[in-house]
Image 1 (tube, rainbow, N blue to C red):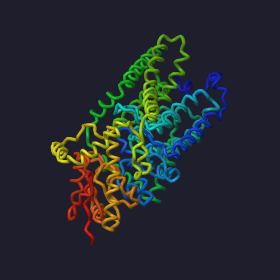
Image 2: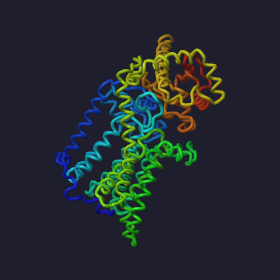
Image 3: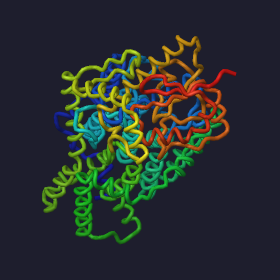
Image 4: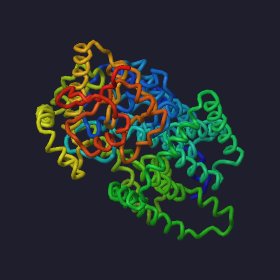
Length: 570
């Protein structure tokens, strides 16, 4: 299949009813999607609670820090780029009652949808069917906080994987831009803009995007001038951000420190990805084998130009896309794995649909469907289970938590969560014994929806206890720091958080060393809070890590589930 076959419009190719829709149809659909998202953010919706829901709290913490004048990288350690946090902060200002999981999921819509509009404006007038075939899957996967791998049997929306899903959607647009745009200026602008956003969202996404852009240069889909222009725009934008804010070098420093904290081998990650996505990878590898056989039957290219043309065929893009996206997904937990291959599969589908005399046609089309269909089917099935179950759920009674408390769950799970909170508070020694053995109450504790409900109730108990303690002691705590994975307390109390501490403190991945500046900030913090329901190895690891900051403080049993390490008055 030649370069011309995948880039030039075919006369009469779009002569069906869908093609007779106005060329503005895709753009109007995008605007309608944006309006629906805005409406959903404006309403105080309660979403069914899902696995790892507390991951969304990292956004609330970052939003509060940004509003307090702090800068990601400079004033607090962040495991990803700053753009998602800033866009989420802007949306939170527009929609103060937005449900946190929806807010985090749609944080990048202000850049994703304009890029999609530009792509549709170029493609829809020329190839309406392809425009719709690219648009509708994108909007589907952008609609809900749903990952393609379920961690819990009960229906709910995923509170984790937001960064990864956003990067996948950016890569989807990048692949579509490289394969479908014709106007040179638009192609340069979109490549530059998408690479900039990828860099500012998650560095591994930018690495994956660089691989794809590099391959486009290698096969002649982008010229050296176009790549140089796009790179110059991206670098100049980053340089401007660094000169005006200083956050780019700080971001890179955080990434280097993060690399030092994540030293595990690649083989276990590759095998995990292969096991989780076997339903896509098995037919994908079979498809590549059949396409390679078909190319061999046609004869191998005999010149450099012929080799370059062959490499620009969809089979080449499919192979490179598989490698690039696989490397990206090995670093992730929760994502829309391999969805960004759809633009390539769309080209393959159109080409092989026309090969009516080719004996491999049926086999190739079946394999394309086996690769393409599992992801949307899983996504729709998981999303609809949560939507259809929602009317039978009950909203948790968490009035002090504001939007963070806008969640629902099965009544029996809520009852269990309330009982477990009391049980943990009354029986801490049993769980401390487990911690001493390096064990949590459950191996998959954070993925269990009833535990996420317990955690929210624990936060509310701590919030009430702090308010009561301040009233009883006539002392307003200047700020607090919580020894837990995420810390919503300062945002809920309206206090300025200490600088230097991470957003999302995972002892195994995102816990940088304590430096003098961080210690000084913690020393000036009135209260360090230790949640106890239940004690876990991660909470104990955080306590040990921050032990120097606890020395000389008064330990107060604030509530059944909370200890407070109080700074003595100067």
